[in-house]
Length: 304
Image 1 (cartoon, rainbow, N blue to C red):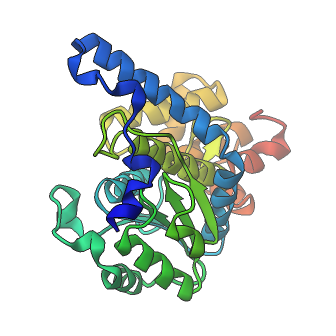
Image 2 (cartoon, one colour):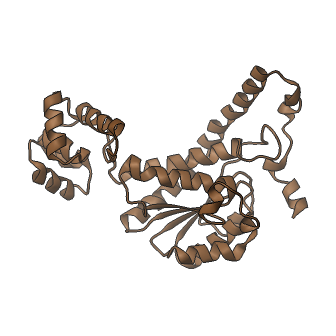
Image 3 (tube, one colour):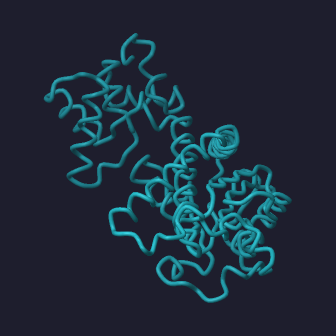
C-alpha cells in the first residue's frame, strides 16, 4: 500500500511551495491563493463528466430516488455538509440528499479509528440506508482507494444504484467500480499530508455543482432565484419576500399579502401574483407544471 500511495498526485511534494515555511505571513497567503486558482481550470475540463453525473442524480430524483454521498474523513464531512445544506436552501426533504461518513455521526468531529479501512462497513452502510436501483451513490475519496468508500461503491452497484466516483488522482481502483468517474486532479497540495486543501476544495466545488444543477433541473429555481427556500428565521423571511419581489416586480404590499396568503410558500406567492390566482389556483398550476414556476406562469405571458 505504501508504494502505491507514493505514486499518487495527492502525495507528491509541491515544487512551488518547498520554501513556504520560510515565508512571511502575507506571502504564505499569496502562495496558497495561487495554488487555489488552479482548481477552477482543472474542473472546467471536467464539465462533461460533472454534467453526466448531475444527469444521473436528476434521473434518480425524478424516479423517486435519492443522492447519497459516501466518504471518510474530510471527504465524508464535505458530503454531509452539501447534503445538510439542501433542505434549507432548496426546500427538499432531508432524505433526498444524504451524507454518509465512515464511523457514523461521531466521525463528523472526531476521527473514528480504523473506520475508513473497513470495506465491510462501507457495504453494510449501503444496506442500512436501503440503497436501491433508483438511487445515485457518489463515492468521495481524494486517493480514490479508501477501502470504506470502495466497499460502499461495490455494494451500491450490486444493489442496482448508479455509482459515481469522485477522487483527486488518475487511474484509481474507483475506475473499476464506478459507472462514471470525476477525476478532479488539481496537483500536489500546498503542504504534503493534508488533502483538506486543494483536493478538498475541488471536491466541495464539484458537490455544490452537482446538487445545484440537479435542483435547477427539477424546478427549485426560477430564473436564477431560489424559490423553494424554507423561511425558517427572520433573515430567510426577508430573503423569501425579496425573491418574490424580484420575480414579480410587485409592490411591497402585494408581496406581503401573497406571502401571508400562501402560508410563506415562495413558489405559490410568485404564481399567485404573476398568474392572478389565489393560493389553491397557484397550487394547481404548480402541480400541472411539475413544480416549475416558469411552466406555471408561462400561459399568462408574464414572469419572463
